[in-house]
Amino acid sequence: MKKADAQDQISRMLPAIKRSAATTYILDSRCRFIYCNPAWNRFAISNGAPELTCEAVLGSDLFDVIPEVLSAVYSAAFQKVLREGVCWEKSYQCSSPRAFRMFRMRIHLLKPQSWFLVTNSLIRTRSHAKVAAPDPNTYVDSDGLITMCAHCRCSRRVDKPAQWDFVPKYLRLRGKASLHVSHGFCPLCCAYFYPLATASAR
Ligand SMILES: [Zn+2]
Image (cartoon, rainbow, N blue to C red; front, side, top):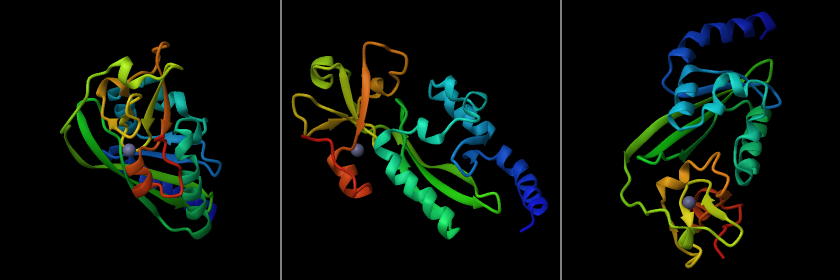
């Protein structure tokens, strides 16, 4: 595909991307943001993260905003898309304090720039079946850290490390200096979704 044709391809897609309800962005070949659609901005604001709106993230590295424990999985995904030119897909959980939410992520290669078109479509949502109340004695360790599963976002209990509870109030700790989140994987998510990673349960 010639360069002009490639630009035309992106120009043709942009109206649909702008209208899409899926949180969508375009990355350059080094995974730096070069475009985010309006749905991205709505998602950032509704999740209490205005610092992640489009204007703020343009030029920054995607891997700066995803938990370190997910880096290897997503790095391998982008490399596979680049190498094979296939669309890579994965369902993941990103619940809000009010709702259980599942999304389907797709990574498409944009040739010949080797850019990436990434879409995240909401595929399932419902009320949380069971939630726990925040309690520093139960979830905060002696270093002031809450260990949260990077996939299901449950928090590990300090008193019973094998048990992970969904604590909605801990989803929005950004900017609260007294509490910090360390990301890991609960045993079930590790075994099912990320078998090559190491679970954080002790
Ligand atoms: Zn989990």
